[in-house]
Image (tube, rainbow, N blue to C red; front, side, top):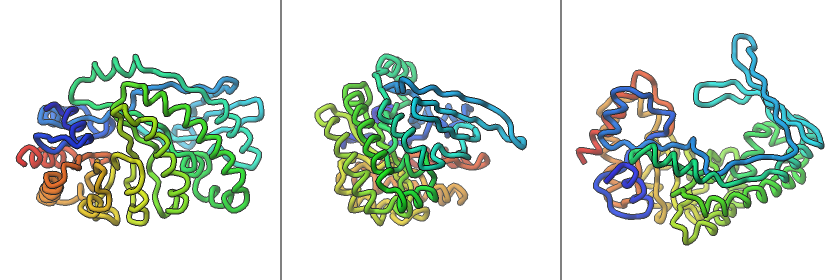
Length: 346
């Protein structure tokens, strides 16, 4: 089996010759060890190729790069017919740090609402299919619905502290914006359903300590069901990225329309072991993130933990071992090789 075939087989409940081992495209520097890992079966998960494009006619975006106190900054200014908002971030390699959020005052609701209600989406199938063919059999591309609306408002637009104040003082405004964003997401579902993707993540990074089980039940779970309904009969699978504590809403995840839980990080980093997650979610594939804290442990601990994951994978055929977080520069090569060697020996 090719690395890509192996991942797809587990996602669809089909037998495999060995447990799939995957890594995000941003976590594997090109080098001799990278080539060895790929030759030994590692599959790269590439999340950078879009299968649809987005635009907002009537909204202009001005981007300015500058340096402040020795640090790079990027400011995006969004101008609309009803006002403007801006955000500032600090580039940091493959990601960035948010410094100034788009939402700063109640008057910004109308601007964000206008942007969401005027968003347009169009298929980008040809470029996606071409990239998939070019990248080869040890790369799997992943589609993306976008963030769940309430989580995007909470984290991307406001920040947790501002969201808490607004949820108390102007909840009706938040919910009006959230409803508009739901409608925007509904434009994406049929585009994804008709696309060449094999699977897609719907948002992620929600944690019960911030989102809370009641809001997760009301503002996330129903959206999974809506998207999954569009995927029904297409062979496409839906998942989400839940890499924090999950015990508080394990029952909600179990009853959801998700086919897989991606980036699930087992204990000791969170409050569920892999065995507990497999028991709690009997119809879902666990696409785990190898616990980050263990990358600071001995190689024997890395190997022993990998063997434990392999044993559970053999029993259930519902486990993919993945790397979704940064690993210290002086540890990643030896650790990844140890994981790969145990998988190939198993």
